[in-house]
Image (cartoon, rainbow, N blue to C red; front, side):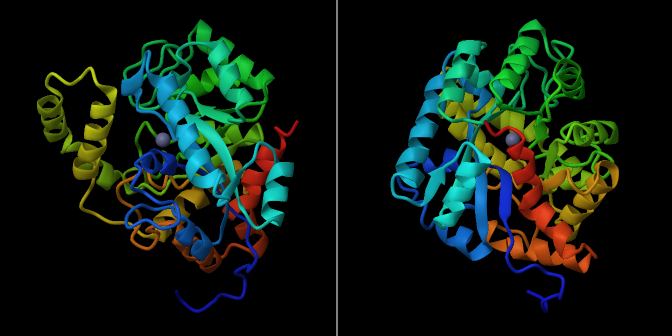
Length: 368
Ligand SMILES: [Zn+2]
């Protein structure tokens, strides 16, 4: 690290809105205390000063339409077994519970669902997951669900269909947080139309700086911020820089060819497909250019310029991405980001907001 800047605040609440670590932890050989690979483990968390994390229960859409619930429950069980039972972290469902976990010096763990296909088109299942203490849900992943369009798929419902509108209305009643990362622009516009509460894009970047459908256009950044919502900046180089996205796009044909070869006769086994897709993702969804922390800060700069300093924060996507900025290689590197913000001219108070306070205050609006 470079010399300490005077403005760098020492006692930071570092709080990140999205990681896919639980997906890795299902593997019995992986120990949460210390991993050979991966972005998030206890040792790295302590080194980087991470205090709180929203852990996504990510289920590959290949489990849809009828096998997602079981997978999500296995992920939930994994969290209990590998993080909560041994006492490495405490499950929290409100900012009061988070405060109490922090006082005990424990990692405060919020839970979310990624994505909306997990509830298998059922409002009752949504209610069930909410009763488990899962506080948010991305409406989609890379594919359309039975009720919402994704930014990664061709439009099917023109945003939210009638069931989708009922689902987001029910989420609002349940004080469950609507997460629009991965959703299409029209889906986000429909959420704005049919709800009145704040919502978030837990791991999305600015389209003005990296022009891809997965990122947010300025008008939606403005609307989310005006709702007192939250936008977590994603560290995936493919979503940070268009040239890297374009390099990856060139591999799509190869990816799809391999995908077809590998899945021949096995497309019916979602565990097999999900594992094969993870391996193909590792191999083919990578560009040759690299970025460093400054590109992450460019996105933070832009989102705060458009939406104000209170709407932006972290949404690393750690353990859901196969490459990172060169100096933000895992969760132990958060001080590099805080220091980068100080060097960019952010005040201590602004750095505190970006590194975690904004997310805390956003979630406080949903406390019972
Ligand atoms: Zn995601």
